[in-house]
Length: 175
Picture 1 (cartoon, rainbow, N blue to C red):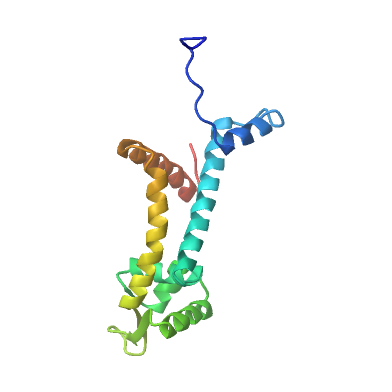
Picture 2 (cartoon, rainbow, N blue to C red):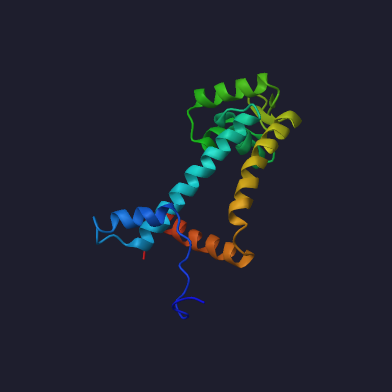
């Protein structure tokens, strides 16, 4: 029988709890809820980035190749090089180099544009789609593993709260 029957059990602690324990005495004005949320989001983002890079490498892709295939797949497997440049925020020469490498590997094809014969369209091949999808699956499994500890309602709440934060970031304003 517990010594204090009305005392709540101590919740499990993560790395960030220790981080807060170290910093609160140094910076007493630090808001532990803001610092905790930002630190956890940052660590989670870094973790998923590492999983993504390893998953991409496991399927013989470089991160920049995966990113290009991902953007192309997100456009339905067909895009103009200028669309890919804009989506990837790259200089024209950078996207050209990526596309040349992906074309040599059989992941994309350059075809005459259906709108303007002087231009080309980039088409995702079946091999490119398969390579992208296999690498994407690694990340998806880890995301499902981590967020699977939350109920569907909790995931919806988390997503909604993060949307609210992102809307403030994207608009450059906050309440």
